[in-house]
Length: 300
Image (cartoon, rainbow, N blue to C red; front, side, top):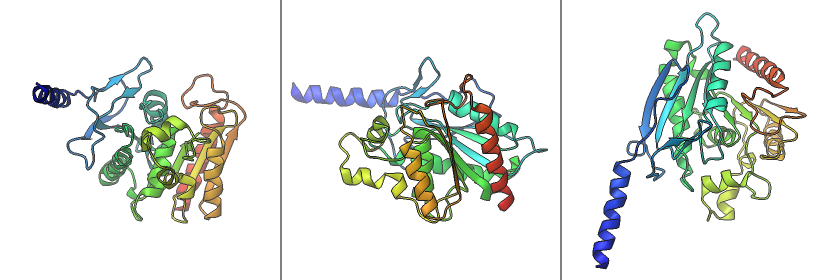
């Protein structure tokens, strides 16, 4: 009887995995939707067996299919820069509306081609999975970007909150010669000390049983080197979700290693303000970001 129950459980698990559904098409103004790899074709799987779904705010859950949403800059004003956008969500969801599509439309409007990534979530410990999704997105834009007016040497990353962690993670864990050209970090998770960081993000990325030694490895301010890409950091001083010390630690590490960097701290706004209609500093963050990107582009 016991053998029968075990066999039945295994069959149910197999059936559940094979019946898993992923969401590709969503309402957005993207010029192109690119279905990339999934758990079967990617180098690693996050072992997610549940169907993908979207909550009331449009955030993705249980992601297993990587998808790129492309926003092409008008060729008449294209700067040649491209940005891979990584929405936040605490590594438990992908907040693709405001921190993805909104940001992409803004960058598109100032001549920058953007690609929003619906990345596969780490599903409690599969830390390599979201990283390889970002690296695949960079390869894709570098390979095909010429037709959209993108210079392959000018492809950067942008991320918000846990997406900011993923962007900085990519900047420091990608091999030399393949790193992003620059990074834009909005109120990023950086430290892995559970007393300082956004606890849920680090637990979901590294697993609830991660050792102190493993967490230390993913304290991103300790991973910065002289080859970490130029980075701009934007945050609010009253952020109660991801403490500002995260940004400060990363900024200090960048400065100590001679990396071109700026940090802009707004007096109010809390957390998650990209695309928020009532964010009083929206005009300011856009101005400083556009100026920084322009200056960076002129130096190339």
